[in-house]
Length: 286
Image 1 (spheres, rainbow, N blue to C red):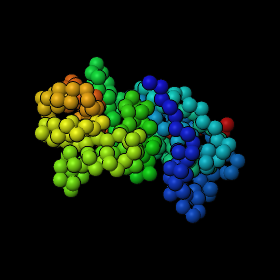
Image 2 (image 1 turned 180 degrees about the vertical axis):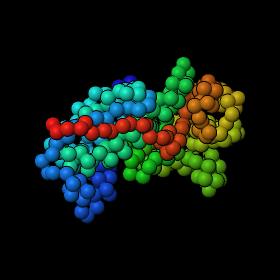
Image 3 (image 1 turned 180 degrees about the horizontal axis):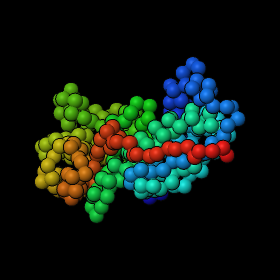
Image 4 (image 1 turned 90 degrees about the vertical axis):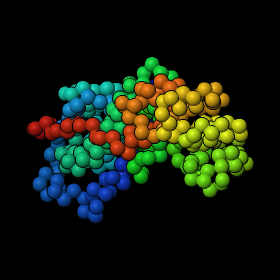
């Protein structure tokens, strides 16, 4: 599946907010004070560890919002794997502008590449099964679109983007409404025909209740592989089956082998480490 890149109108608000947070009310007072206004430099970004790249457009925009004359040549595309020493991008232009934008650019690129890299690791672990890896709403506030994009760059898929685009009936909804079946009935009566409905269950009895009413997808929460197999057999293709809870690269294989359609993994967005990427000036005027 080819990666569809995010349009600038989605990326720019997050990048602009990050720059404004850094520049404050006075701008980059250090670079302005010590760097001549006409000085030009070249920066190189290189991988220091293996991983998958994501966020090049955000990094490029960080420089261009500071100074539109800065140019960035990418030697890789988002979604491509890199190894230590690989040259990811070369950036040229005003030294002041490069110094002002470098941290924001690297923050986005390292963070999003980290998400893409760990996602790719889980995807690789379950290769050969029918299951796909999906992310959750456990994202950094303000960065959801970018982080979910990074998951796609790593070969994963996206769950719902927000509260408004799909119904997901969780355990607290069930507790308040009095049962799985009643919650599903209310959801069907309350949303339009274009909205998918998923319900979270943690027992086979709840799953049977959900399937008796009918639902588009079931979230099988914290079930061991043996129970997941029973659940998949019970559903028998009548709904999408999604496993969640405690899924790591070590447990993913057994969970995927149980026959579920999706593995819902929250930590790939909320706890992935940054990919180690170096950003260095090439000494000398250009």
